[in-house]
Image (cartoon, rainbow, N blue to C red; front, side, top):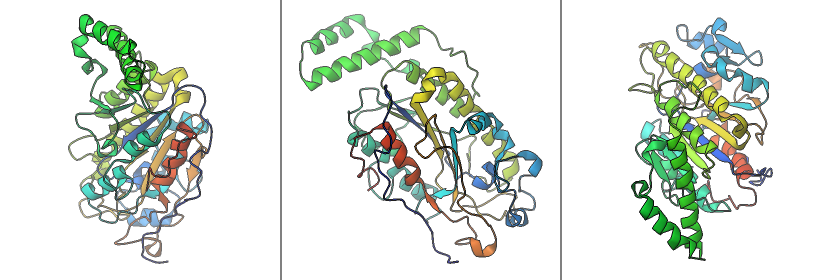
Length: 374
């Protein structure tokens, strides 16, 4: 077993893997910023090497929901088990990228750019897809545009749906714009009319109040997914959206006292996603959610009862008809010294781009997506 970064790419994947049903599909990307510990999210409780490397931090079998006798889901994410049981949840262990810097900044840029390119991978997807997205085709939940959307055609950054308006909702201005664009037979006119229609739907949504009827965790992720659910159900043509799951000040960067820090993050992740999927109701069939992180953590715990920057982690995909199906992908089957890479890391055996590309093909059948990831 070598100490090199091992990544299995599936370059033969057909981006048009499966046809899209009627209605616009929405891709929701949840970024676990800070390097989430895949070995705690999906503990390999059946591997002796895991328990030897983490005498303090290994998740006890009583706190694991067994999936296949080797891997299990952290019990704090039990809210996602109904989606596992109906075959709508795919879990990929040993997931990551080819970046070996173990630097948050470089690894996050590599992931969000889909490689070493300058623009974001979601931006390239939006430019490649047919038909082109509308005015509200892409929305980033937060305060700044994420690198994954750098170079996107249009796009909105907001924290709440109520933050968005056009011309201050002035009816005279809106009427004038409507008259202007309705008289324009070109693509500019069509884009303007689509924008005004999206604005009308959002105005109606704001008028109906903030409550969705679903209780979300009062966290950055919970509040963000609540707003995304509103946009999906308002049918504004949302194609792709992003939201960060950052938790406290350090997020998923659990160098110290990991057991104390990571528990609430894991619970928030499971509960927020479960609330989002329940809130969507009939719209759920048109949404695919992917949760991923820039890198995993070292297999062995450190002297501060935490874990340091590593390589392979875990990724989740949830959707009613995932092109790769639900279930568990075992990226590794042992965690002994000879099975690790670098200073003692889980090997990256599944490139995150191979998880994403079939989903993009399903969402935009017939589009030439070969340039999305270079």
